Amino acid sequence: MNRFGTVFLAFFLMMCSPGIAQDRPAINIPDVLGFKTLTGDLHTHTVFSDGHVWPTIRIEEAWREGIDIIAITDHVESTNLFRLKSVFGDDLEVDREGGFSPDRNRPFEIANEVAVRRDVVALNGVEISRTMPPGHHNAIFLTDANKVNTPHPQWKEAFQAAREQGAFIFWNHPASFSYPETTTLWWEEHSWLHENDMMHGIEVVNGRNYNPVAHQWALEKNLAIIANTDIHGPVGMSYAIHEGEKRTMTIIFAKERSLDSIKEALFARRTMAFFDNKLIGHRDFLDAIFHNSISIESVRRTENGFQVIINNPTDVPFELSRAENNDAALTFFETKLLPAGKQTTIRIYTDNPDSYSRVDLNVIADNLIMAPGEGLPVTLSFIPE
Ligand SMILES: [Zn+2]
Ligand SMILES: [Zn+2]
Image 1 (cartoon, rainbow, N blue to C red):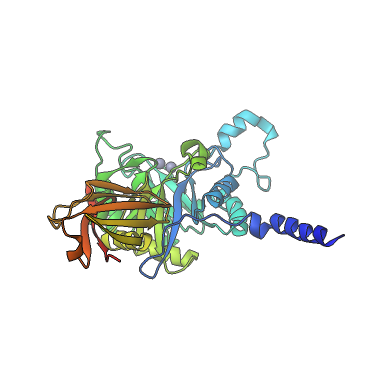
Image 2: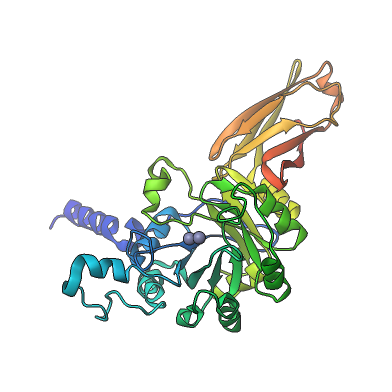
């Protein structure tokens, strides 16, 4: 083989090597306040309950999207076993290795084999799905999901069995199955769960539905802010992943990318919701995300003001609007989008730009939500060159 051939072969092998061709994509949101910013979907279904995909697909989807954590949370009470049995009859061997099994740990075990190879953190969970009250709740970090499968009226025993395993438990889609259907109600049963350390979080977002009542409860009752897909079919059928859309997810601020750290972060309520290009979380973390995401590329003094170029290399766009309390001598945008992964030019007009050694613009980041209807106030500070 001549030298060109050798070089070509080396290049070809390099292109084929799994380390290069299969680098895990990542969702670009900066680490903040000394924590690693991890992404998770803590509510997913598979064919083991009423979902439409095999558990391994949940991990492959996550890997392709750059999601760090996936909880497999099939309804603990019902499986597809009986439905499939009626279709396949005796052709379906129920207890075969890797086949359908009434063992509630199987979907996680099957998913986890791939998760370990793909460096996705898989969590063993179930959805405790009882009529309202108390409705549906996910229990994750289980060691034996079967113990949570109690008879329907014995819902307290199901929660206790999960909690005895150290489970993190959160209330799913609190608006569904409420009576009356259009309201979100906090029942006595929820107080019992909350007071007995069996409700640690709440889905503020389920799928594409944001629930401001649940958001308010999360703040008042110190519940972790949770956002999940509750996906049953392939993720790509509900979210335009191929066009860059992100699925609904929970952001978790963990000391390390490990199971123990993720669990610690959830119990410490260091979470945030990310959905529909919005972040819902606590002020300190929202503020840190904003300031760690953007950087000032340049600040040029012009004849009648300033021209500022701002970088936003992250996957979070920032929707800014002008706040009330600004220097009246400065004229600038009413609203401005800092798109994800792009540079944006801002123009500020004033009669005497030379008199400024520093320019402060007070704005509201409307898509960084601290409380229902309340965006994050931030100050953009520029020092002209
Ligand atoms: Zn549910
Ligand atoms: Zn569900």
